[in-house]
Image (cartoon, rainbow, N blue to C red; front, side, top):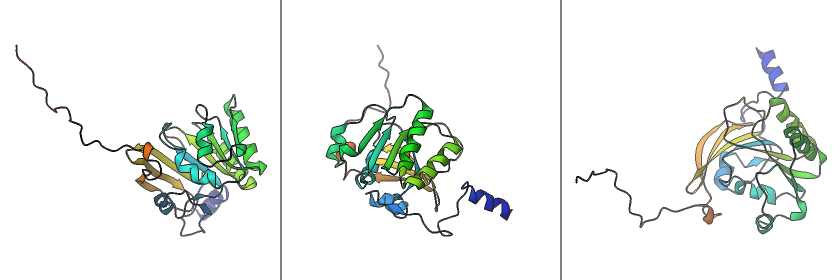
Length: 225
């Protein structure tokens, strides 16, 4: 049994808990609660999987990471067109932003791998729903080679095999920001859902319950004629 476990560890198919091995290097997300849950922040390098519906603020929790990068930030196959004004007003140098719209899935994976291991990029964001284990392992190796961070932006799709990523998060909308579940993290344990309050950072992104709304009656009375 021990030989089998050693083999799986060498192939990076399993990891030990964070109390049994040194914790990976991390970078602050800019959100104290999220940093606390992740024992310091997001991984400095490696593959991060983010599952969420589109347009719920999933990019906003990555802004501090993207701002801290001095090399190229690459967006591959984003859903729609990125707003240059938004990135500029967040403090991101547009000269360091590269947007790629591949025609095929394999081309998107190839572009991500080349960017990761080039050494010219600090973060790569790839929008794609499904990945295979061997594809993610190639991206992990490329991250180590180029000292880069890869974000897999995935929809809330069907259940699939666990991927060999450094961190996996599931995001859901909440009135004050986002509900976050840590489903997998290297060197640590999964964390149940918690609410990330972003109202201080993004007040327009949240909504408050109005006090002057009159609710509809819960029972219906049929009028007789």
